[in-house]
Image 1 (spheres, rainbow, N blue to C red):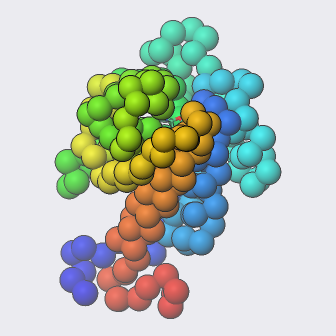
Image 2 (cartoon, rainbow, N blue to C red):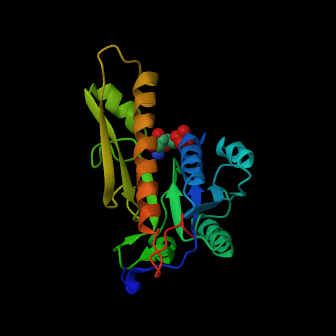
Length: 214
Ligand code: GRF
């Protein structure tokens, strides 16, 4: 194993960002429980009543509640302060209903990858149905194929480079709830696969030891 691509045997530290019920957040936390290379050290929400707060509590993960009370710049500064204090390397967005500014994102720039170390799950096959209420709009459009996209985050609205997509079929009798539930299963699947890949990439040391052997 070439020493120059070898990271130290230290977990990546990540924060999950969510504004809603947090089923994706829970999937991320559960997936990483089996991945010693990724430590979900923090949950961040901008909604004081978000369901994700209780989920974080149930897993014993600290949750920072940082609403946009005094404008976006002040909120992002507060988030950055919290993330830097917790030594966070990666952000996993999961239903976080807010755009992040270029100035905030530059703190997570990964020059080698050419992306920000910030990932988001979006409930459509981007670039189709970018923005809010994607399941609603796709269902109303009567599409028989729908899907979800995992992508790196930039400061645009769902415009960052795609990591993975998964599609599924809408059967003629599918209710809207079933349509969303089927999509969410795909969301969990591709997010988990990405996390396993990221952990794998982080799995080797200069000595060629894996995490399992360490
Ligand atoms: C998901 O459908 C995700 O794709 C979208 O917001 C929803 C969050 O759901 N960005 P949950 O809170 O993870 O259940």
